[in-house]
Image 1: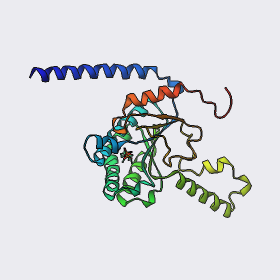
Image 2 (image 1 turned 30 degrees about the horizontal axis):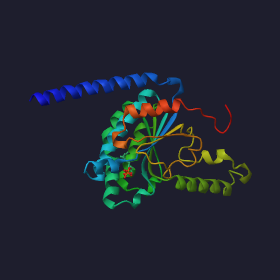
Image 3 (image 1 turned 90 degrees about the horizontal axis):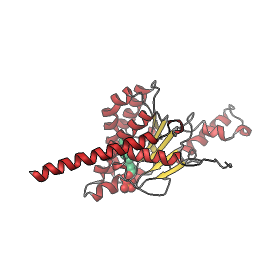
Image 4 (image 1 turned 90 degrees about the vertical axis):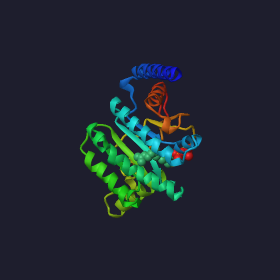
Length: 264
Ligand code: FPP
């Protein structure tokens, strides 16, 4: 009984210390130098779950809670755009059961969260080859996008059945179509002709890319857009990734000197 009581007190005290640390770090963030666009590769769900003797699906489910938290923090900080990598064009190679779980989680996420996203003025913008998804997933993404289309808060790009190379292929197709129909001349194909045909057309490129779970690769994510993005690789697995980890990544970003190939 006493042991339980002291355990409870200790936990309460630890939470208080952690809360104070989050507040302290949040106060250190320079609101004038926030990244306008943050991109996240939500990695580590599988490893996180297996380390706990649970199924990979359990990790994905836990990952949804991190997504909820991070969307909330980005909204509060008034970050303009958050792009999250939720399902890649290569993820179809996973066992059918895991693919099905990810599709179900997508539907569940939007059904459960749409009210709150809308209340927080979040605009959901799905990116990827959406037409190849199962009908329920397409419906969920369409519903979320339509319901939130006039919101003026955080733009939440949900990359689902997304691949950077596939995006470039789709862009090249669109460029070629416009050259053939005469609205674009081959001589006018410059960077802008590409960027204005990407899934992220009209948006600034990400300033900060966060990859939780420690791996050092791009995994076919935003290949064009990440040309001058600052990378932050976090050892924290995505299901454990919370406000404090995002704040630490932003503080790290704010200490960087960005030269875009030039000199200071
Ligand atoms: C990569 O971790 C993660 C994914 C392939 C899925 C990400 C999905 C979520 C966070 C939840 C779903 C979100 C929505 C909007 C439906 P991994 O499984 O490759 O982890 P591992 O590298 O440890 O195996």
